[in-house]
Amino acid sequence: MTNGFQSTVSDITFELNKEVALEETHNAELPLPRVAEVECAKCECCGMCEECTLEYIRGVRDMFSGRLICGLCAEAVHVEMEKNGGKRGEALNEHMIDCVKFNRLGRSYPALYQAENVKRILKKSNTSRNREDY
Image 1: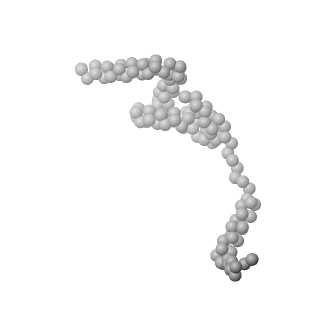
Image 2: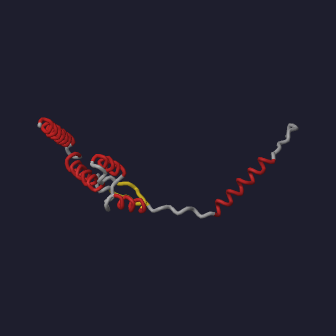
């Protein structure tokens, strides 16, 4: 039953539908892009695992003297580099020492780790005050 109305299709709609159909057949013929292999990489500082491509792992190792570190530790190393004048090797060693201390003491005994840090801060401020006195 038609109420006297006819549906019409404009030329633009017809052309758009034709282009969409053409794109779908063209995309079906293309092979899927190759997916890079991902592996779980463990940070040598903090021990956190990240899923990384082999290319990314090689890049990180090249940047950090053959060591594989996570993005968080890499950022901490960059901050440490700013403190010590841009020496990446020294900054990496300093950060790794801090991570070893934290993993050994901080995870098991967080209050003791915090007390150790307060003690270190007090020693630094005391030595800087003694230098100012001279």
